Amino acid sequence: MSSELLRSLFDEEERRPLTISELNADIRGALERRFSSVWIEGEIVNFISAASGHWYFTLHDDSSQIKAACFRGTNYRIRFKPFDGLQVRVRGRVTVYEPKGEYQISVDSLEPVGEGALKIAFEQIRAKLSGEGLFDQKLKRPLPFLPRRVGVVTSPNGAAFHDIFNVLTRRTRSVSIVLIPARVQGEFAAEEVRRGIELANRFNVNADENQKIDVLIVGRGGGSREDLWAFNEEHLARAIRASAIPIISAVGHEIDWSISDLIADRRAPTPSAAAEIVAESEAAILETINHHARSMHGSIGRRLLESKAVLQDLALSPVFSEFPQRVRDDRRFVDVLATELREFVLSRFRTVSNRFDAARQRLSPVRLASRTAEQKTRLAVLETRQSAAIRSLIESRMKFLNVGSAKLDALSPLKVLGRGYAIAKDASGVVVRSVDDVLPGDNVQIRLSDGKLNTRVESAEKN
Image (cartoon, rainbow, N blue to C red; front, side, top):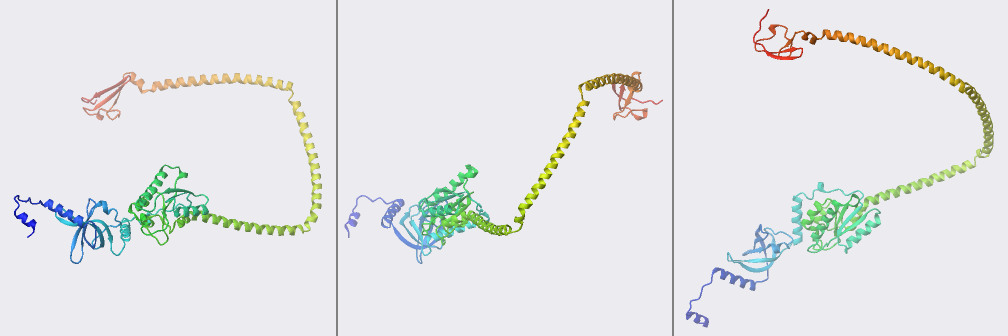
């Protein structure tokens, strides 16, 4: 028998029992010290994503199971959302959930067995955004035909920006480039790219029309799936869809596809290809202009050769030997016409001069003064006659007006009323011509020479 057992038999003081909480706490401490970091593998069942953000599930194999908890502070680093039936490898520590006395594993790391976590996460995000219709072709905005300013959201030190810069400066003459620097790899890369897109959109809201960014290129050069993962983040995809500026996604190489490629307005297999897309309209226009210029130069050259041949034929033509004589003949003809014209002008001048002299004689001052006096006398006589005729007409019209006024006054109804007569009208304004037109109680208006009387019929008597 051990010494400890003997001592316990002869203890004078009774030992205090442990509480349940103390026992669970001791067991938890012992388990966490003994199993502080373990790897286990099993299948997920009864997966629950709580409103608090924590994940709870059970891991089981063919003959046993253990509860697991992955808290919000940890699961945000896991790039996919677990689901029932998924075979996973878990790293964590064994602990006890003291309120229920259940032991469980607190998950620090979770990876799928077989298919990679990044691929599962990619498919989950793509399915979610596709279910919301964010990949619909109807939502994709057309790229501007001739963009003037191109924004590039990428790392300023990466090869992607240099490729884009080289292509645009080589193939365009009117495009300016705005670099919006952002990390394109690492934990905060997706957030920086998202902020770059939002910054470009805020700039456009307040910028002048000729300063606005017409199109954005978002991307980076090639790399592993882990390196390119920032362009698969859900919040970056939603920022691309919400952008008012059309976006070209250029992530990795031609074989690499990202969520950004699926949701952007245009996908380019490489950053250089994105620059080619931006420059293609201007390059096509320049090529068309150059083509027409070459065609025009060729056409002009052919026309010049044809004109030279025609000129040589004309130079050898007999008409050039006859031309000087024809010029001399025409010059003599012109001299004859000039002489005849000069004589005609002189003759017309003499005729006009004679007419002017005759008119000057007729318009001498003495004759003009005499005719003016005669016209003044005649005008005075006419004015006197006119005044007398107007006075006579006015007097005649006034007499006619006075006679008409007297007749009108004599025939006026008001004149008759002045002699004591009156006019009676019923309530509707109709003249009462007989006692039969009214009844006792009717209102009757009586018009006198100086006013009106409103009366009521008490009785009617007929003569």
